[in-house]
Length: 276
Ligand code: GLN
Image (cartoon, rainbow, N blue to C red; front, side, top):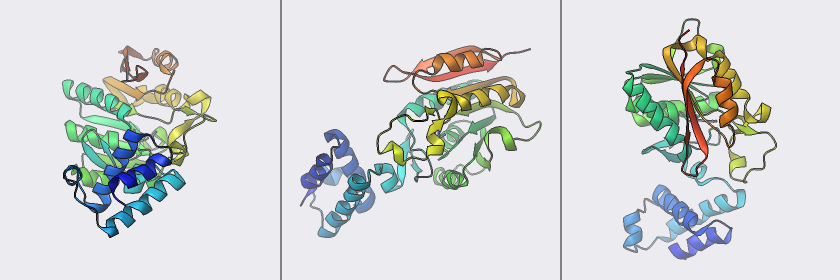
């Protein structure tokens, strides 16, 4: 058995051809140190390597475990993050939100950012790495925060991204204020049908009441008391949520901007605190 046969095992389980190639490359690189270059040069795999990869492929196709959970890592904006089933796998769509946040933070020389529902810490760590700001990441899940802390070490940004266990604003202290509040909250309505892979991600990170809008509502309603003057609120959006979220923002925020992702879906919304 060689590379092509291994790939065929994945394809036979109903995983699309290109996706199968990508996943096999990820497994080879992670578990066998077998690089893209080795692949191009047609370096043979040892029996031991083949057995390891076969075992990982079984885990992938029998349990429908996402490949990122099997290797324990995922790429986000050019950095590798530790992930586990305790955290959502970072998505390409979230890169749009974080790219825009970095621009806004740098253009305004902002120094304090709050990331609500930080999960793996991918948003908090990437902002800390690319700006002068200190980012406080909060999450209700201690297991998620353990992963986020590992990611701070992995990215070498000690003290610039810090974490606290908090259910939304619950543990934000009186007088503690931020220039930007950012969140990629759970936004999938309960009872939505999801792929088996997505079902392996933490329900806590996926689902929200009120047709997926409950976290936006609470975050937006309470944001003014935690924002500095001229501060921003920024979110990732689920499908068809932009107008409802915009409406929630209009009372206290201005210059509201919505941006589309590569699939032409309204994916990011942000606005500036009104001066009263
Ligand atoms: N903030 C994390 C991310 O963007 C987690 C988001 C979530 O769990 N809903 O990946």
